[in-house]
Image (cartoon, rainbow, N blue to C red; front, top):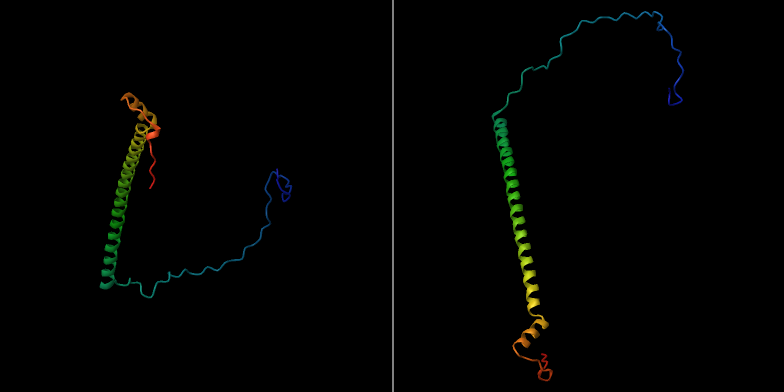
Length: 133
């Protein structure tokens, strides 16, 4: 029943126990007074300067909101352009890699030897000189 040692066993009875009658002291009833009002219940008038200031600040706030939205749009467009340029760069890099690999295959020594033999040319090592600068 109880999960800690603070619980006490309470005998269950059929009828609730009654408290002995204790007389409550009589409270004095004070007449309710009208709620206190400000000495000047009128609202303060708004001056022309305050009206102009609120209008100018409202316009500045509206302009700033439009500026934030337009800058977000231009940022999104710039990111889109950057992504397309990056994809073009990747495409050109792949083309360059493929072309370089093809050039290396066409310049291979074994291929050049095959073409030379086909044409009836031969390589004489005695006629080869190395030139260094």
